Image (tube, rainbow, N blue to C red; front, side, top):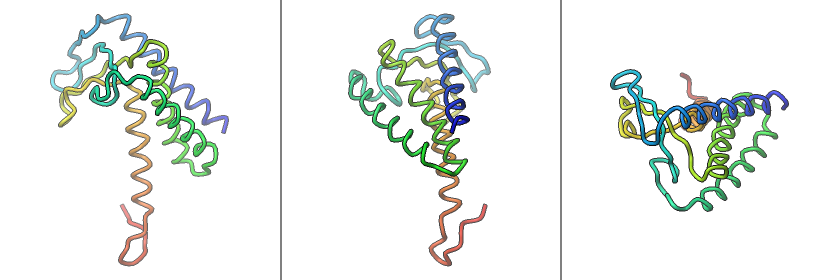
Length: 158
């Protein structure tokens, strides 16, 4: 369990260091192309959640974030499966990173943009968001892989 706490703490620290770097070294709404068509960096303030949805609902978002962090922590502590611990550790670090922003400065600091991505290419996000997506993808991958096939009750093989 100690290793999981350290893992989450390190991820949280990396997230906060990156947010401090971008918010102090870039002007608000300033972006810079790193790899044309693939990666831009900059600094924006996100007062909502994904794609800026629910802007102006800070305390509702904070409450949901707190409840989800508590639930994730509870499952994380009880889990014996390594992939669940890693995945939920990523999700928890991402959720608490963005929650910390909302409580400390009133918005989430975003700084990454990948124009190459379909649908979300114009969206600016942060490493906390990446943690959450990767953690959810890990859970989905293992759950689908381990789910019995309805035809013969054998696990799906990849």
